[in-house]
Length: 353
Image 1 (tube, helix red, strand yellow):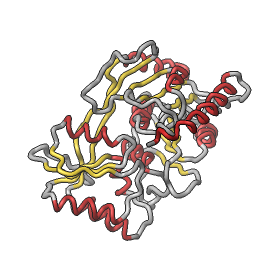
Image 2 (image 1 turned 30 degrees about the horizontal axis):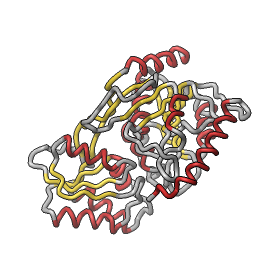
Image 3 (image 1 turned 60 degrees about the vertical axis):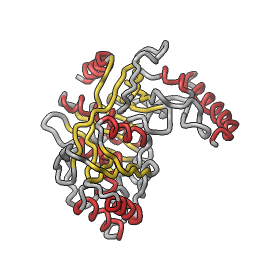
Image 4 (image 1 turned 120 degrees about the horizontal axis):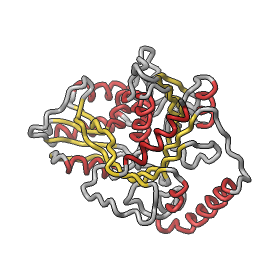
């Protein structure tokens, strides 16, 4: 039905073209920082795997002993003030919740613990340029990594990485999911096709695009709140997710031959309600399942819910602690042309040193 919105997509395309022309002809100036700036973005409205790539790049620089700041918007959080947390931050004051940080930031904090090498800071700000300036001026970061920064043309990037869903439809918003024409990926320094959990991976689809890297996701295991690993013996599961590409989570189940007796979809960044949790528990009981599976992104929304001391918090605590709820622990792996990405990162590292 979104096809009826095509006339509005043409108007949107014209506005995007004018904006990009203004930047290309330097009629709108870009701002530069003293540190290195890396953008991980896309040309679609979500579901391309930016956050796992942010983690991948952050781990690289942290592992080299550098100080890194990650800047996110914190989509669908309640408050719009700037929030800052160091990697390894212990949530003793209860400040870590989706109201303050949003789900993707909380997921990154869980996946990027404090290390003995470099040091890291996570900054959530509605104005990413302000967040980047803070990291540069106050924290003196060696590198700033901008999550979802491909359209943030006002900030100069030393490395521009764009994530692509190779099966993305080609219509612009609002008729499709594209923020700008697909051909604009050529503006990036590195184009990464993310195949996620697909078994139908064709590495020859890229036509005349250069600077292309292919990646996918690898399932490490399913873990629960106690960090216990789910044994893959006679699993009969209820699964649910609220992510940009729910089909990728279903493909994960198919690839691992997990018996999913009921699959529940929620919108991306879904703010769970007590009724949603009751629906999941009811399905678990009615289907005689022996576990409940979800994504890490959904899990942190239950672990750090909005509206503290509410019925929602009680329901979230109930399903996390009293039911066999496990989330997919995944890691990103490079399938092809890893040397291209490594070379770009090494060049930045040399400039920092």
